[in-house]
Length: 132
Image (cartoon, rainbow, N blue to C red; front, side, top):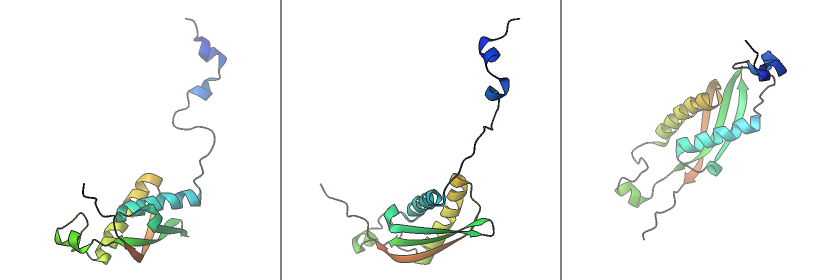
């Protein structure tokens, strides 16, 4: 049996390591904050620039404070049952979004979330659909 020329040249442990490589990965607080802002914006169906997030260490878990604008449909959309829920309170929207945020952060960042505090600081009016 002859040895494979590639394996004869390189140390075996360098190429046969599965699932682990030398080095480390660091996710900065700023990067995690931006990820959470996008997740929160998606959960509230608003643009990311209408969300601000602050993160804290909560006894080894992630504490999140998010300030958001909520979608307020126009009267015409409300009358026609547009794409935004009109019979849902702001508190119900925040509770639903909180659950989505916790789940998605766990999926995307692998973070263990202790709490998500949500402050509604304004409204977001979606752009009107143009009639062609």
